[in-house]
Amino acid sequence: MSNTSVPTLAYFKTRGRAQPIRLMLAYAGVKYNEKYYDRPGAEDMEAFKVDWLKEKFTMGFDFPNLPYYIDGSKKLTHTKAIMRHLARKHGLVATDETGLERQDILEEQMMDIQMEFFMSVFTPSFETAKIKYIAETLPKQLDALSQFLGTRQWFTGNSITYVDFQAYELLDWMRLFSPETVNKYHNLVQLLTRFESLPTIKAYMKSPEFISWPLFGPTAPWGFKK
Image 1 (cartoon, one colour):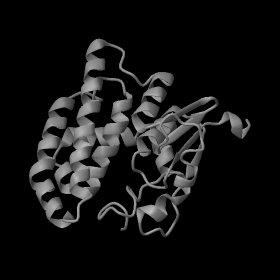
Image 2 (cartoon, helix red, strand yellow):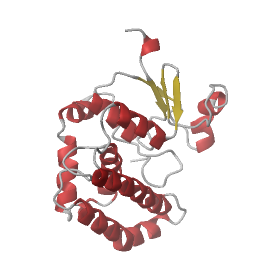
Image 3 (spheres, helix red, strand yellow):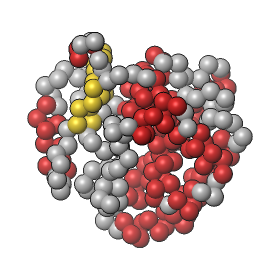
Image 4 (tube, one colour):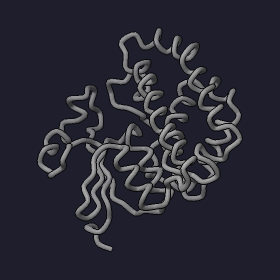
């Protein structure tokens, strides 16, 4: 198979906004090329992004951004647009009205949760914000997610959908951030274990292609440097 027939996913060599896409591609068994734009050793975002900024407006995207996904003539940007495309293509969309409603609700809720998480991480007062987030915000978020999941295998029911990939990634960030908090929620921990035990995901996580760290770029007080 020639390289022209293999999709390309581009981002930085961090987990960030591309990791749920990588997990979906691994789950579906899609062979693809990965392009990284960051520069090793960069200490600020300007240096980190310089190679991307040189190409950003030369590639013919409607809305140039990272991550991007190119598959033949299809050229997509933005995480959720790429995830939804892959979900439709690989059968990772809920198939009944109740599942679709839960899928839509969870997708929006995870975006809200992620925004609150970023507000706690990307702040000059990180150490103070971290204490408050773990004590006040994180338990409320996990309470709601735990109740929403209930005894289901996956968030929309018995079949995995693209929002489970989104949820896994964010829950794993939270587990890295405050493992003692996440570990109190047994059904969420079981979900994480169930996801990591999927054969193609398990194989991907053991491969050299898998990125476990860093989560974010060099401006993050947490999630970049060990």
